Length: 464
Image (tube, rainbow, N blue to C red; front, side, top):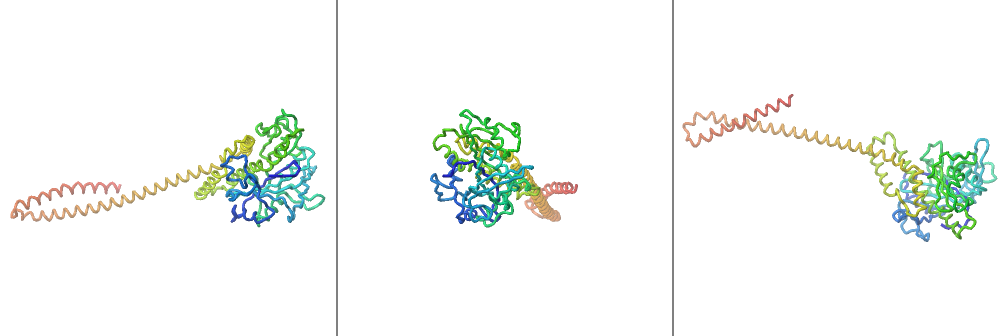
């Protein structure tokens, strides 16, 4: 990404939204391509593993669009706000928030809007503001205002009326490319009454020497990573965890929390030629991609939890769809390691910890245990039904065979009795005729009596 503007203190606010029902990622991409104000953003994924980057890169190393757009993701940017009723053409705005009796006012410039969309049905809109700050507290005040997207207010400088919220600005930006906007932009991690955006900031601060550590910038990191205004009292014990602040190189200090992400760029008096520009541009391209990538993972997990209710927990078909969606998400979007470049690898790992993704996965995977129990129960019921049907079939076959056996026995006995009646004629017959007949009668009686006794016993047992 090339940016010829002066390097400044920048703030991104990220708001998730759902792709409208009936639409898809491809339809969103088509609509964005048809709007000249939105331009394909050159995501090259330079510092990620190939198997990750090839799924998300939209351009080659020279910024040229790839011939086949990725099917999982799209990213567009808008820098021209002409034609939008709420937003000024030059992006100059004044932000305000009432903090007790003291209103907080900050002058901002809206530089650009980024629109991300994923095949999971989740989209993210990011607004990038710059702050003309005297010190880091001005940036912290701006973060504090912009984070409260539903309650804070923006207006054009010099106007007394015309206040609008960052949330309304995001809706206005979504309206043009999508043709329709959702009834609300979903803040999946909080209730509708508390609408807070996720925040990421790039802030320049004076260097405190080559041996400085994150602890030397603890006050700045405390306010900026927690999005606290200057009216909050500084404390070394409030939500302080050592792993949330670290140094990625001698002039870069990261502060992370569940509320915000901040990169402090500690400027040296003799900064290497081009280093500041390269680092600044990387934050607005590669680091931005990684941050949004992780936010998307968090938003999807929150949506999985939001879609669960008492009915879903006992509905086998819904649980099967839940599992299929989760498997698709895990295969295509979730990686425990995305880069072997230290700066990006460590940031990725710490974002997973700060966003509590491991705990979220435990909650998300819990319904799969219920699904397995339901499937086991269904399999047991199926086997029981099959066994009962088989037993009934065997019982029917036994009855039929018993009846056939009785008929055979009675038929044999009938023939035997008929032969007995002919005994009186035996003396007149030759021995070689009547002797075999007499032997057959004896055999029939010897076989028939045990069979009749067994049949009677089985019948009596069935009656009991």
